[in-house]
Length: 140
Image (cartoon, rainbow, N blue to C red; front, side, top):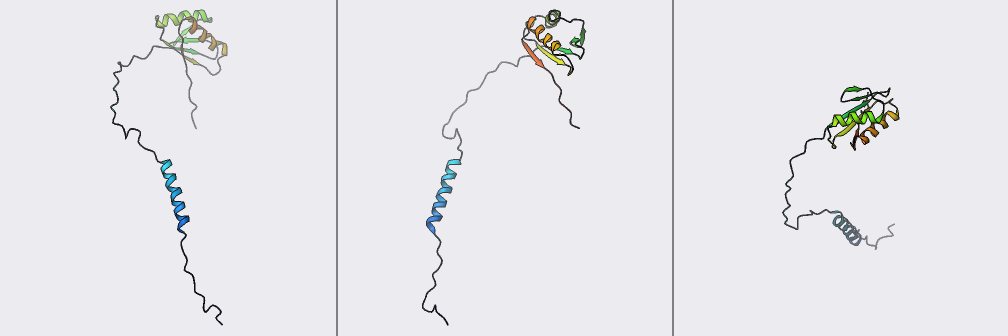
C-alpha cells in the first residue's frame, strides 16, 4: 500500500540568511584584527643622528672579599680591616677618577659586614658606581 501517492517530495534548501550572517561576522573580525603599516600613508624622511664617538669604558676597580673577610684590590691583597683604610686604597687606585666602577666579588660565605665595609669604603672614596659580580650555576 502506498499512502504517499499524491504527496510530492520537497527539495532541500540552503538557508542563505544564516550563511550571510556568518560571513559578515567573519568579515568584521578580519577588519578589526588586520594591522596596517604605520607609515604607509605618509611620506616622511627620518632625521639622522650625529652621535659622538663611543666613549671609553670606565675604569673598573675589582675588589674581592673572601670567606675570612680579607680584601684584595685588583688582584693585590690588602692588609686593611676598616672602611676608612679601604677607602684610601680605592682613592689611590682610582687616581681621582670619579667615574670609576667598583666591582665587588664577594665569596658566598663572606660575612655581610665585610661586604658592607666595601660599600662604605666606596662611598667614602667618592665612587658611587658599584657593580656586584656573581657566577651562574652550571647545569650537570
